[in-house]
Image 1 (cartoon, helix red, strand yellow):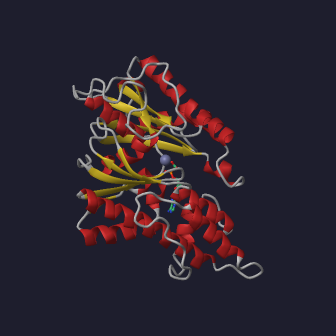
Image 2: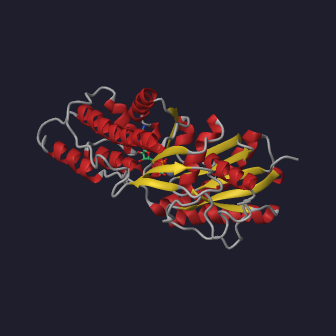
Image 3: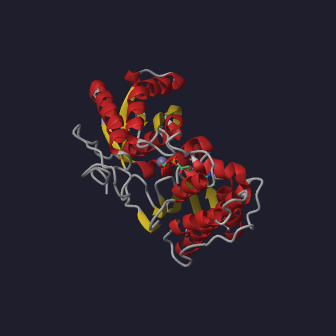
Length: 350
Ligand code: KG4
Ligand code: ZN
């Protein structure tokens, strides 16, 4: 019979995602975004996000099933993001996932959102080597992780951000530069015509695997203020900011690979979509003889396929399903891919 088809549901921020995965293969997925509804506020408004999830959840699940040519009765398990994220937004996804799992009589698995970002890459490039180095760079997180068996082993944090996340830095500086929300893609776009050496922005915390982006954010704001009354050379500022972020991220990630003797670096999360982060990671990995894996753009930002990918790994590892009173954990630390008490190792044969 093979392993079951896993439905993954993601609703931790402003994207409602549903994805279908079986044995590491993506069968179909759909994403609805409420990003446009938040744009005029300059950031995600939790209540608006929750309402949008409620509005879209059913439709994205249907759309993913249609894309895969499947019916609800074909599903063998449901995986859902239980944290970290916005609590109201998470609640909607978890309630929906419970309803589907209960109605179909199939197991439910709670998944850590960031483990989803890691697993996204397996849908394009196959199973992750054990061990591998993972750089997670999103709007809410920046972490350098040593990952072994994602479904079974604890994840080792080599470094985390001490303040802002890399994506948050892009978003906040973009606002100061007068660029539209979300800031990351806007900075990427205008940076193309700028000079990355125009402004000497700081490279914080050299020699550590931890990150800090708030000083860089402040430096960029000061630089913008120093142009008061004159036209701001936004392209140069954006290119220089992007260069600083890409430099810091890739320098630490490559150094960690060398120190831990790890031959593969996986860069995931929304900021992995950044063209300079990708290019510099490629250049430095090639020079250091490290294999670089970056998921395709559509799997870098939040989606349900990545949650289904974790669910599929958990199911195949024999992880114990979550109880139906599974609850959300908005600030869950990333220790295990499974996110509900007692499941991470239980029944996984270790
Ligand atoms: O992983 P993600 O979709 O959501 C979170 O879990 O946070 O990441 C969103 C973040 C935002 O901060 C956004 O500005 C950033 O990823 N981002 C980018 C690019 N595309 C998205 N940052 C820089 N360059 C990009 N091309
Ligand atoms: Zn994310």
